[in-house]
Length: 63
Image (cartoon, rainbow, N blue to C red; front, top):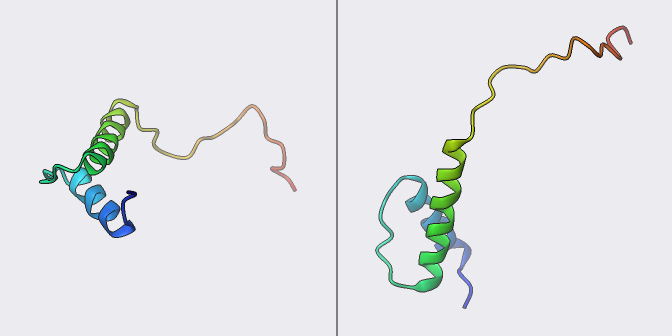
């Protein structure tokens, strides 16, 4: 049985807001753990801020 869009949204919100799931359904738990794992991996990646400037390749600057 696949998860309904409503249930997927509730699981996603619970995972992103660091709430417990409160369900014993294996499919729901798997989706919850997948979201939590993706969030943990995103926290490990550095955040690039600002606008990237490419001073070496000014193509299209005068057009």
